[in-house]
Image (tube, rainbow, N blue to C red; front, side, top):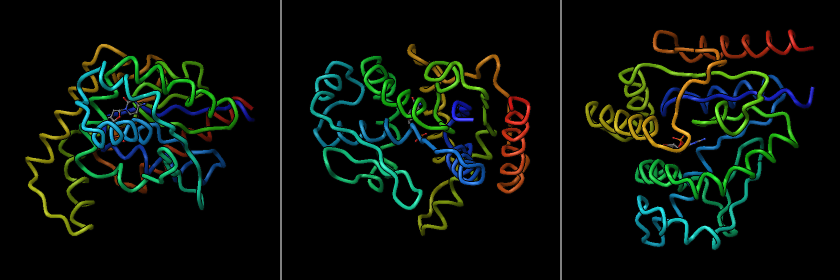
Length: 226
Ligand code: DC
């Protein structure tokens, strides 16, 4: 079933990436993290000293960017002008700039074909903010994965703590709320649940339960389509 694509959208910190990656490995899909592509543009802008909020300035650097995606041991890698930037794009200071650049139509148009091509050539589970609404409107299954802002902040704190970074809960929570607001209220391709998306709320279930739930929803739809 080559053209069975799954679109997963939702706010930051809902566990989309980790859950989608594991389900993709379990069910034989290619996992595509589209946030990583926006993060790569954000990193390029920051490195060039470009104001991420300035659409014209960001659009002007796009022709200089050669953004490629590859896979190494099943892990998605982002390559910017020949340099593997997969680690660097995860730095906290990149998050807000990624959100800023992703609000520009010029950036979204520029990255659209790259995402659609991946879906044409592979059976994908693709996650982002506008995958079910804009990038793959005909995806066979759309999922809107969310959790309360507090639950997402708590998980983010634990992740950071495990990496030896101590943070303030309110700071993490405010950061999440600010990014939600920006991603949901922008003019171009705002984050919203597609009408035909299945809502999965993980506020009260843990990672393993969320994983089982997500995989079972995908399996059921695949069986129904077979
Ligand atoms: O999923 P993430 O946190 O790595 O994404 C970083 C930013 O990129 C996020 O704030 C919104 C933006 N984004 C987007 O606008 N559309 C997507 N399909 C994926 C991410």
